[in-house]
Image (cartoon, rainbow, N blue to C red; front, top):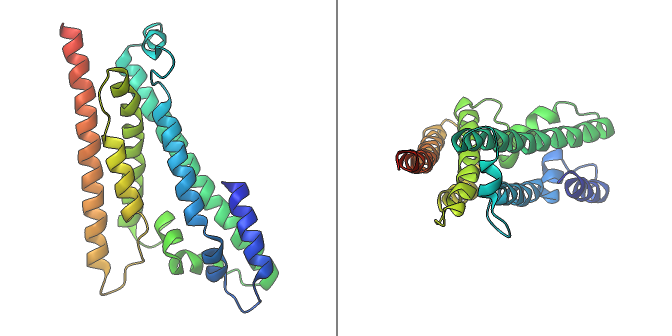
Length: 219
């Protein structure tokens, strides 16, 4: 992700005239598309971890000195850490790009302004909208649960659909403009329903896993 975005930013930066602002250069280099593709690839890798494709992962898990429930819990924690890492890396990459632009044109204030002007960057790191930030952490936690539920259900021969719904919702509603006096209520509503939908889907997936685990223990 860093390499791809650096190449695209370098090409846009070198071809841009001094009159072009940082927001325009970032828009031309499309970091949001690269981030979306890499995030989807990461989610796919997390979903495949523990699946019975070419081998019986259930046998490996049964050899662990912890229960299947604890193994599932630590997979959620692991997935959350990796999803947070790619989010933090994306923020860091953008800050490096901003530093390069500021060093060239002497406009350090653009680092802050671009996170308000660019809808992708504002959705990535909403500096003045707490509802956006809370929604982002809910998305991260829900995706961690969904990617952990995928292999657990696949090993049981079931169809794990929760993560697909989560990914579709993230792709459709992650990129949100900064709220204005007229649009704050509407954007807050989107954040609320997106967060609520992700919580419900994640809770349903979790309930299904734990309920089946309890049934197996009783049997």
